[in-house]
Image 1 (cartoon, rainbow, N blue to C red):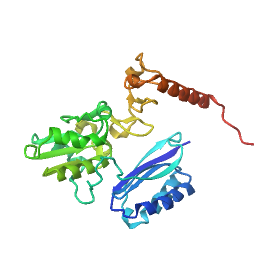
Image 2: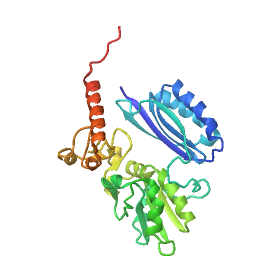
Image 3: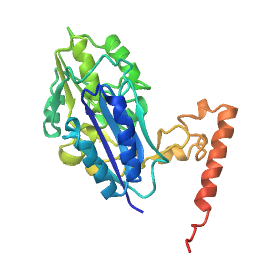
Image 4: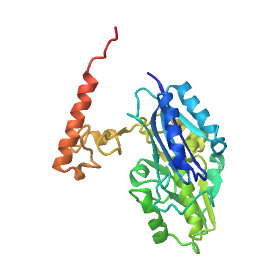
Length: 300
């Protein structure tokens, strides 16, 4: 089995976002897709998996709405279905900053193409910020990048207000996995009074895809929210697996730790493992093993 996995987002004013929910859900269900699409007044954000012609049919349906006509996507493949069902959810934000009034449709920072990114981030006057969460930063980031040490994107505004000053930090450059968090973050920083705010167009993934390794300033691997777990230059699969209990990336060394129990805990989450959570995760892992070892059904 080879499934196509497509991700996309677009900040665009959608005052009728609630009315779009059922038609989009029906279009996806008709093509037997699985995944999640988020709709909010500020735009759309989604990941879909299924047969490629079915994916293309739904993308064509979405692009038939003039507001999504230029919807950009990123593709990967999966050998097993990465989602159990199809969901279209209504949200206050398509990426949760906790501040729906911050809207990239009103103002946004300066987009920087991957080929121009090195020039921006090697400027000594530029403050470079990784807007991702700490477990993402831990396995790879750009040289000189500041780690806000956040556990969720909601914590980013507090970090900015605590550590940065518009009067002192005249130039700020930011990056994230695919670009969506940086668009929201740049809109927030402009509202806070920062004058020159840059962000990497297409995110780390586009940089790793387009910039040759010998020219790259990226160090390590990039965490991704799909079955690949992490990627390297050229978007080749990395060396990390994912903890099925907490969702964090785990290295080969992590899997040798006494704290690692497949599907139950890893060194990053073992301290969160209450007796109740242990029993729940153990039961889930046992069910996974049963399903994995079950012989395939033969249709007659």
